[in-house]
Image 1 (cartoon, rainbow, N blue to C red):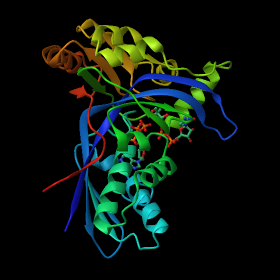
Image 2 (image 1 turned 180 degrees about the vertical axis):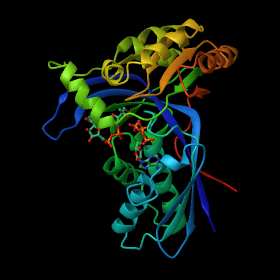
Image 3 (image 1 turned 30 degrees about the horizontal axis):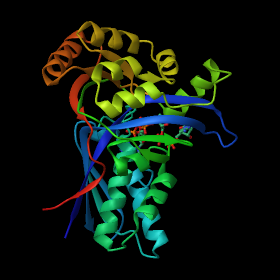
Length: 297
Ligand SMILES: C[C@](O)(CO)[C@H](O)COP(=O)(O)OP(=O)(O)OC[C@H]1O[C@@H](n2ccc(N)nc2=O)[C@H](O)[C@@H]1O
Ligand SMILES: Nc1ncnc2c1ncn2[C@@H]1O[C@H](COP(=O)(O)OP(=O)(O)OP(=O)(O)O)[C@@H](O)[C@H]1O
């Protein structure tokens, strides 16, 4: 018997970052939206913990116990006093190290898949607790939809969403290290204010107003990502020149996210971004998308 879980990528429509905390993390007002790019994680009984991965970026994914899917299986098994003997196969479509929480997605998916396979029957609260232990973005991968993350981004409040938004993601060559981007933020922003969610942005989400959302997109990590990867400015310029309503670095980058009017605009902006030579590839997607879900056969 196998269990397959499908899990979405995310984009941060607002990422407000405060000063570094004593534990090295930063307090955030992190407005997450799940988008329709998905990984699938399949859990199958095995003699020991084993990870395999397929997909265009598969060679960049660690197959050892540092993989967040493996860590999720180990944490759940340890809590329930069982051995983490499982084969986890990741069908990866989310860009790796791209600021779209691909590793976090696999952690949440593996957790849900193992819970179903092993019959551990973890409550939602226990699952969310393990997710937060795995990483700041992981709880949102479980929940999906739209949510405000406070604390280091792991404390979620679900947000009402009034419509569908259309996106194009420009995938860059190579990744950016999330800790390095936060360090660069600290260097560039010695007096970061307390982070707060923007009322205009929350209202744009609630009413499904694409134009208002385009005007409210904000990422405090963007100057840091641009400082470490100046060529992202060319990608942002190419996307907006091609007709995107707004462009932003996604999370810690280097993926850039473009909000567009509709599916037709998504197609033409994606084609123009690819033709511009300022990114490795471009993908169209919509939001919202559901969080991690077991797929029924
Ligand atoms: C940039 C975002 O993707 C936006 O959603 C997240 O803030 C990053 O979340 P993540 O990749 O799940 O991050 P974690 O695995 O929890 O932490 C990785 C590293 O990122 C930095 N980090 C992360 C989250 C946070 N609120 N403050 C931080 O400073 C820390 O250096 C930390 O050691
Ligand atoms: N299942 C996984 N898939 C991809 N990368 C993983 C996974 N588990 C661990 N990693 C490691 O995490 C690093 C970051 O990968 P990931 O795709 O999660 O980045 P990201 O999209 O920038 O994440 P975030 O937006 O949460 O910062 C990779 O370089 C890889 O070494």
